[in-house]
Amino acid sequence: MQPDPLLIEMQGVGFRQQKTDILQDVDWRMAPGEHWAILGPNGSGKTSLMRVACGYRWHTSGVVRRLGEELIDLVKLRGRLGWVSGEVLQHAPPEESALSFVVSGRFGQMGLRAMGERHVTGGDFADAAQLLEAMGAGALAEKPLRVLSQGERQQVLVARARMTEPLLLVLDEPCAGMDPAARERFLAWLGALMEEPSTPAVAMITHHVEEVLPQFEHALLIGAGRIVSAGATADVVTAESLAATYGVGVARLELHGGRRWPLWGTP
Image (cartoon, rainbow, N blue to C red; front, side, top):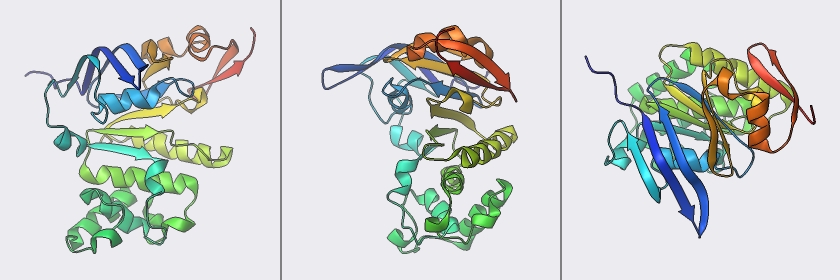
C-alpha cells in the first residue's frame, strides 16, 4: 500500500512581488495530518509562505507540489482548505447567528443572508450544529456574531472552515487582539481540538513563541523570507534559532506546560 502523497512540497521556491523578494529558496514538506507552527517576526513572510503553499499566490521560482501534483485544479484544492483569519469577520453580517455563519462556510458565502438561504437544507444546519457541539462550542450556535468574544469568534471561524471537511486548516494569527485570559482559553480549546482524530492537518501562523502548543509537533522558523529552521518543534524552537530568526538575543527559554516561553534579551 502506497503512502498518501505529501500535502505540500516546496523546493527552491521564491515569490517576488513589486520587484521585492518576499520568499527565497524555500524548501518545506508537510504531510497529511501534521500540525505545524509557522513562526517569525512581522513581515518575515509567514502568511505569504502559506498563501503560496495553498495556491492563493503563484510562486515565481522553484517547484510547488500539492497532494503530490505540480499541476492541480486550484479551485478544487481551495475548496478543501480552511483558511481561518480575522479578516473574514470584517465582511460577516454582525446580526448573523453563529450557526448560520458556520453553515455559510459550506457554500463559500459570507453568511446566509447574502444568498437568501435558497440552497440551504435542514441537513446543512444539522451538520453545522453537530460540528459546533463536537468542538465544544455548541452554546454559541444561536448567538449573533456581534456579541461573541474574540476567542468565541475564532471558534466559529474554525467550525465554519471545517464545514467542507478540509485537508488543512490554516490559522492566521488566531490570537491577535485577544487579552491574555481570552488567549489562554482559546489555546486550551485549540489544543483539545487538535487531540481529536477527526481534526485535519493544522498550520498556525504566529509571531508569539509561547502560543506554540505541544500539539504542534512541527515548527518552521522564517526570517526575511528565508527558512531559518524547520522540523520537530523541540529541535527547531531553541534559543539560538529564535535569536537568528527575530534578530534579538534570548536570555532564557523556559518550558512550561509543554510550551516554550522565551525571555528576550542578552544572555
